Length: 91
Image 1 (cartoon, rainbow, N blue to C red):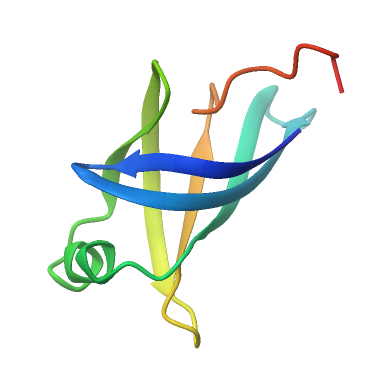
Image 2 (cartoon, helix red, strand yellow; image 1 turned 45 degrees about the vertical axis):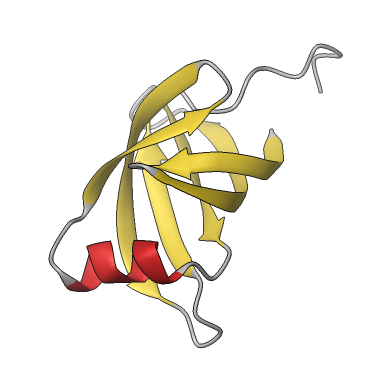
């Protein structure tokens, strides 16, 4: 599954680009991607904040900020329920 669209990281509106997959080794769903450049998210990461709430619509989960990429975006990862809603077409 993929998601590209608006989201909230902590209390900051962002554009999120993520993908996920079921991992048979540990039996959990893993998702990861990138937050488009947003200075407030970079400040959170540089201040030592790693674990953050991620909200897409009414769905909220926890994500982990990883690093700032060369273009100013921030990598994010998560394990478990993804923050984006399931694809209604099942794809």
